[in-house]
Image 1 (cartoon, protein in one colour):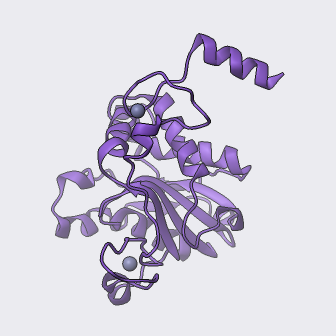
Image 2 (tube, rainbow, N blue to C red):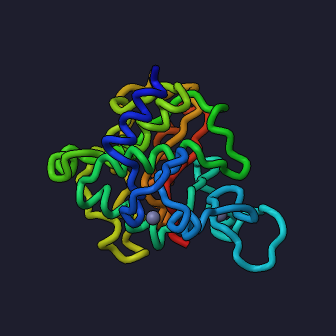
Length: 239
Ligand SMILES: [Zn+2]
Ligand SMILES: [Zn+2]
């Protein structure tokens, strides 16, 4: 029955590529073949902690210099692809133009992707990087929460959007210089209900991993509040 409705919906609303808008035979993908081929998927070899891919001649996963000098509180950070081209355009349409349908499709892309040495099924709770209430009112939605909700649904995992909050209204990280970013998010997050976090293996979801300062600070707070383990999952990563 569900299949009939899906087929009917495809006739009335034919699937459009979220990259270029062309109508195409969906085949469970939200990108047409042309756009899909242009996504720079992140694969091994990479830093097995922060997930930065090695584009040189390294052969296996190992810790990068940054993670050796300052070990993050998360065990691993993984992203679907590099923050460029079709993925960058799709994220902008979602985040800044409020195209929620694209956000849901991107969440499905995150759920369907395979990540080197990260098995989402081994985790117990999904938490999005929270937005401050003021920013939430400005934007009207939390892009990370939409991605996290889609992931939670696909993996039938609990989603918690209430026990972890952004308590400080900070400048958007993109407007700041590299050195200012770490200080900007320091102390910006709080756990409001420790009982919900303690002992959990958390998948922390964000849209883009830029310098990693935001998710590093989130992971620090979650671990401080007795989360057993934190892994970070983002749609895209700046290389
Ligand atoms: Zn396309
Ligand atoms: Zn690293």
